[in-house]
Structure formats: structure tokens, C-alpha cells
Length: 225
Length: 225
DNA sequence: CGGATGCTTCGACTATGATCGAACTATGAA
DNA sequence: TTCATAGTTCGATCATAGTCGAAGCATCCG
Image (tube, rainbow over all chains, first blue to last red; front, side, top):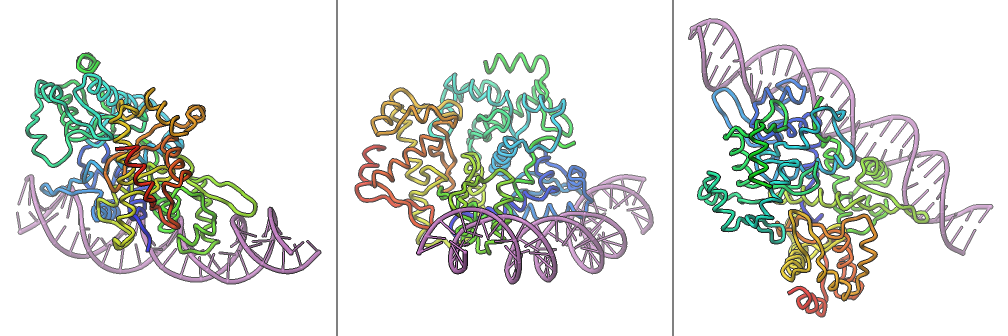
């Protein structure tokens, strides 16, 4: 009778405070165990188990068994994009779950968005790649140019491996703090991994914040002026 | 204690089926009365009144009194963008509220997205404007070039009026059927209004579908090859 | 002034779903 | 094997919120 996709189901999944806390925690990009997620949400393990089953049934999460642990993560990039867009609106309405504290500036500067770099640094990186004509924009689609391919391979990223996967290599993701786009997709993920592997940046414990080391800062500015 | 925006509140507002139906109806772009929205949602007027108050308090809707009617509409472009992104995910999971019927192809071809053109036609229009270098893309921001400004003024759009408002003139909006961007913002709105004023296209009653007339089809293809 | 329409408020009912204790399964360690 | 940890399932409780009938404002029309 009605036309269009069913947004109520998704909305109700996100609408429970406990589940919303879990999803926000998973926006940090790490896979977390049921117990860890229960702690984040402030509920018992039984309740968490029930919530996680619902989120998985709704397609928001995937689950990976490892020994006696179950690791949960956001199921696709698209879930992260959707959550980020809701966060964008919530933030614009001043609906924050916390008093803006000392952690806030760090989050705005650089943070994990599911699996790639967001915040001021994320936006600057994409801008720089576009300015250098290493990424090209048509419509909403991003494409790596030949120059771009040479560039990322020079950085040590296995372009062929990215190409093989069915996931888009480049993708835009709207930043809730900057209100502009940053780079998502498998390349976005590979770049963040690179920064961390090289020791230029570190993920903060229990937070989405990314802390750049001094040399990391310098290198980043050189790579993406 | 927790960091980041409060997505649970927004989620719970969207999560109720009655409210979701109302929001989907308002994605049609028209402002609707409380009674009309109650019909769309399949509930009584009393219940609808309570839902509408909540949606307004949550910042999703605005209300305009006109005589003894109250017209409700989505409060900002950003709400439409957020809803469209949720629809995108829901559609990708195959969560539709209907059996794909005869109306479906019409919706995919051309429909209203809050206040601008979406679907195949919407995507084609943006692509064409970009190809003609009348709109320029940097990062995620769209900008009208000088050529673009001349172009829209030639079409009879009051560019100065658009410029005056605080709303962004150009803006991307992710299309749930095409999975690509189309043109939103005040220019997107002005263009759709133009098509309808000129009699090139008509809004279908009780649907988001847009039907182009024969001359409308032809003109559209000429304007945006 | 009625009388009709559009919408809100109040109050009562009801159902859904979040929560947790207790019992159970599964994996790993000693 | 026994014990400990991780997680699920079941059942009972409880609160929240969606629902509608009835009554109350507000606006327009004749």
C-alpha cells in the first residue's frame, strides 16, 4: 500500500539508547565483544545479547566467532555512512550525549569513522588529493586517477588488492563535525591503516579519537598539504 | 560520559511506524495538514497530533498555521538528506513497505525528494550540469560557475534571490534508487519549481512520483543532454 | 449568533519491549 | 575431569509509549 523503503524498522533499531550506544562504540571501527558492548551500553550481558541479536537480524551488524568470544562490527560501510548522517543532524540540533569536554577538540581534529579517517584531518586529506588531481570527482563518485594510483602504490598500498574486492575503492562520507566530505571506501581504510602501521598515528583507547605523533603530524602535512 | 551526538532520540522518532509513514509522506515535499498525515499513517487524529508534537519538538518538522489548518513540513534540507540516507540503507537490505508494484518504475524514473528532483532524471540533470562545467565540484561541495549562473538566469531563475538566502544554493543528495547523487539545495528546489510552473512536469497526487509531459520530456533532454 | 470543521488535551487502556535473575551451552585452562 | 569465562535462552517483571474516546479550544461560514 505504501511506497518506498521501510525506515521505521531501522529507526527503531537505532532508537533504543542501549543499542545506540553500542553502535556509536562500533563507529570506532574496532570489532568488540558482547561483554565490551554491554559495558559501553551500561546493561547486563543478557540484555546486550538480546540487543545484538536484533541488530544482526536487522543487518546492521555482523558477528565473528573467535574462541569463546564473539566479535561484533558494523556490517558494511553503508551502515557507518548512515549513522554518520544521523549524527550530523543530531549534532546540528545540539543533541549531544555529553557536556562538551576536553575530548571534544581531539575528536573534531581527527577521529575514526568506522574504518577511515574523519574530522579536520580527514577532510584535509581528501581536499589535498583532489587538488593534486589524484582523485577525480564526477557527480558523487570519486575515482582514483592514474597519478593517484602511482601515488598510493608509492606509499606502499597494494592497489591490486583493493581493486580485486567488490567494495568501492573511493567513496565520500559526510563529516558531522566539519560538515564536509572526507574519504571513505577501501582506500580510505587502507590509508588509515597505513598511518597507524607506520606509527604516525594511534587510536585512543575507548574513544574514536586519533592522536598523531609529532613526526606523524609533520609527515601528514608534507603528504597532504 | 559518552562522546558524540545523541542518535537514539532521532532514531526513536523515526522508529515508530506511524511517524515513519508521516515522514515518508512529507518527503513528497508538500506541506500536509494534521488530518492528511493521520490518514497517511492510518491512525486517528488524536494520535497523530501527539506524534506531530513529538516530531516538532525533536526538530524534524516545522508547523505553519493557516486558518484552521496546521501545515507540517520537514524543517530543513538536512532532515530530508538524513531520511534519504536511511531509505538508501533500508532499500539495500530489501526492506520495503510494499510489493514492488506498477508505481515503482515511475518513482525510480523521477520523483520528489523533499523539494527537488530525484531518481534517474535528477541524477542525469546533475551529471549534465557538471559535464557542461556549469556546476563545479570540490570535495563534497558544489558551486555554480559563472557559466552556470548565466545559464540558470537564462532559464528564468532569480539568482540574486537564491544568493540572498542563508541556505546553500547547491548541495548533493544521495539517491536511494540510483545510488548516486542528485542536485539539492535552493537551486535544486528552484529548478523543480520551474519544471512544474512551465507545465513540463506534474506531481502525482498522493505519491512522490513526478510525471513529465511529452514536451517536458523533450525539453528536459535538450536542456540536460 | 449557531453550527461545522480542524486540531489539542486529558484520561484510561493496552501491548510492546527492555530489563535482569536463573539456568543452560560452549570453549578454554588447569 | 573440574573449574572458569563467554555467551544464549527462558521466564517474570515492569515501565514506557502508542492508541483511542470524550471533551475542550479555535477558526471559519452562513
